Image (cartoon, rainbow over all chains, first blue to last red; front, side):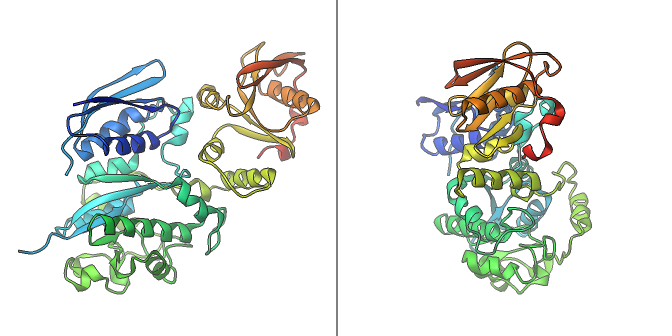
Length: 77
Length: 347
């Protein structure tokens, strides 16, 4: 299990979701990924994308203007 | 044992594609969604930027549709490939710079490629015959099927009964009798169907989902091409066209003026790419400068920036001129009067 970080700052939705989706494709089940964004839409969109695609949101938080969503990669068929 | 047939549905986030996918799911077909990001999508962006919109609940409607239907959604970045569609549409533009027919052909073609790569059987769209003046007409819908290469693997469940039978119908994968015969611009059948399915929170149609159908946006894009003497763009260009006041006082430069805090914050991210102006003696906008400016141009730009600051009635406003966020010059300048910023300068 490894932990990764994805810089999606300045990108507007759906780009943070697309970047997260592309990154997750390269990871193994159980790996975790912090997606760092500035678009507040990511607070809803990334968790929605995770629910649809079988990944788990471990944490989501906003610090000043930055949003960090932590994902655990699920078993993808 | 019968083979589980699989379809990919083009999901825009609107009601029609949602109903089309649902119609096919209800026939036991495994459906997954695909959503294409062109850079011109209205979805989300302006809401994300403008502070006044921040109070509104934000959601990506394509994701909402997929979650509501319980299907996977694949969001595909086609920004680079899409340029050729915008710049060289073989079927021309609609009322503005919207290449709707080429766009639909391109998206269905991309979906066809996805279907082939992922061993799916056919493609679903929410198209309704007669609903759109360019891409959803009786004579253009076969063009989409043909030019995309999808041919009879392209099924439009909402109006299938008005069209020749497709492969999924001929093969018995889906029952044609359980498809629909919607046509025309009325949305009443779709709304009735949504009601029957208990869907209430779907996105309302509001002039399309693409900025290229917007007259003002298209005007800004055309201006960009004229000023740069080339028909091309990058993602940052088309994002910036959605934000702020755009003023071109002279052919050689344009000003992008933040209208409120959210836009100023967004423009802040571009200060290493563009020269900028700040209002230093009173609250005011952040201004990006696009083009080559002479000293005389800079003075004019500073007076315009001052005009849009809270010091517009002051005798003088202090404006900072920055390159790469480093202060290069300071102007103490009288703001232009409202009549000195003619309407023709506004893009």
